[in-house]
Length: 422
Ligand code: GDP
Ligand code: IMO
Ligand code: MG
Image (cartoon, rainbow, N blue to C red; front, side, top):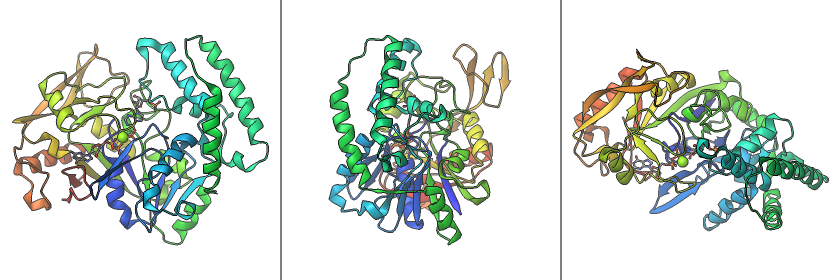
């Protein structure tokens, strides 16, 4: 069986932390979509690690980590990640396997991303500028460059012809953008050599074989459901399916092989980049969340926008993913608020609605809140569910009743150990 761990909001829910916590119980941890737009933070033994492409099970000796076919890989960022992990003496050749069908982010994909954003001006997506959109465009446009291509002698020709096409497209955008392709290519080719020293596999075969032998697999989502290319706040989304179905196509597993679907959410909401965010706060409360929660992007360092928990959006995400268990993160950040608010319906084009509508815009959507009493206690030293404050338990019960799924983990700090089973 394969269990999935998925972000239910706009990303950065704390997926990296929880995958690291759960990885001990799994034989394999696999990423299935996204790429280095992700920044997954792990903290243990006083050290902090941010992973972008490498699955968050990498620190567990017994787990095999797989970068699945649905992922897009930037060799340069991948090499940096490997370099950062060098003190850990991990045997990457046997512990980190890469799907031949994963697509490669070329230097010109990143430039195209920047050119596209520049052309959009104020309407920009707020992309991480990692080349995600253009790489998935080449994938669905059937022009992509895949990891498996590196096994063929003519891969440099394929690379060159795709790059030539990109250069024409960059010209077409007609925006002022400067880049030094020679330097970018030099680091790219160097990184490709490192990548080629790893093990490439037919990951769908490997994973299905492992499942038939009773091995346990955890699929690690990137981004969040509200950034899903189909179900997110389009066009302010990423370019992959971040929801449960993405794990099937991104790893080659059948839907009936899915076991638990862990849905992870922050006790409040954050978003980086542009796009609608109905519960966004611009007042002191929002600033407190940002400050206490250290809400800065793990990939880009940009400040994250903050707001109250949106239960309408959460219920939508739970439904689309078939979530079986919830995990509530960053409860500690809300300590000290006298009253907490949760969004329980929207006013949309003059009507009260309880579902996530087609196009949320400031002009057509406002939110209705329910007040819940806050908790004042510091949670960060707590270790058992019995110690959790009553008001936090009431908050959790309210969420469970609203979305219809139990909360099984409450996280009270960024460290691996600050994780409470409830
Ligand atoms: P991911 O992309 O979903 O893996 O999440 P990120 O790593 O981008 O962002 C989550 C941030 O919150 C990181 O800085 C984590 O170290 C931190 N974090 C995770 N869980 C908790 C928690 O329960 N409390 C606090 N205070 N921080 C947390
Ligand atoms: P993790 O896995 C938060 C956002 C970007 C932008 C939009 C499109 O760490 O949760 P892209 O570079 O994908 O074209 O950007 O999606 N975004 C994320 N926001 N967490 C992420 O990943 C994100 N990956 C992309 O900010 O708004
Ligand atoms: Mg992140």
